[in-house]
Image (cartoon, rainbow, N blue to C red):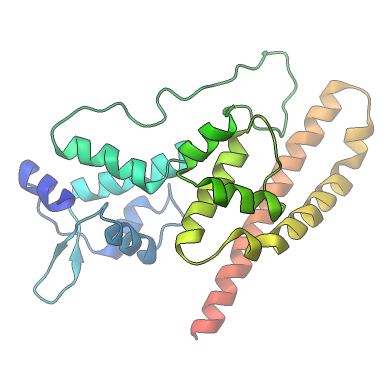
Length: 239
């Protein structure tokens, strides 16, 4: 429906292999893999052309479509269902508002010190469920597993987490399977607090701000280590 339709409208010739698509988008989306492209095709968001021997071929329009999908997932945390509705409207020749364009943004005073607390999203329980494409049952399971706190308002990280739980549930991975992640996160938080303790104890705001910035950097590095270890394990199992 989509990619081939776009190619016919623009005259674009599907000629890029999966590897070439990854090369084009890899710098912006380092986690992109062939399995992700195949998954998006299975979900009906991509329709690459096929060679007589069955190899997928992508046009430039397909690559931009993939970029749009990945940006909406990464920057606006939209579920695939809503992304599909947005793209389908474009394919029909409509001009829908880009998802996330009207997202609520909570302003922060310029003089405020940097904080590790997210401040771009402020959602009620029902809004959180709707934006994540989740069910009330899944949210309750996340609460029980200790992955999400019960609250009256929810923030950006809560939306990211619940959206991820929706995708994982489709693969047979539920919140109960992820309880060890909560323990691991608490361990990482302890490492960060230990490394930034000196700056956090100082009374001046500048020192606390530096400690928080350092904490964010350490968190990013720990996340890279975790991802590298998972990839390492996957390589070992496939060898």
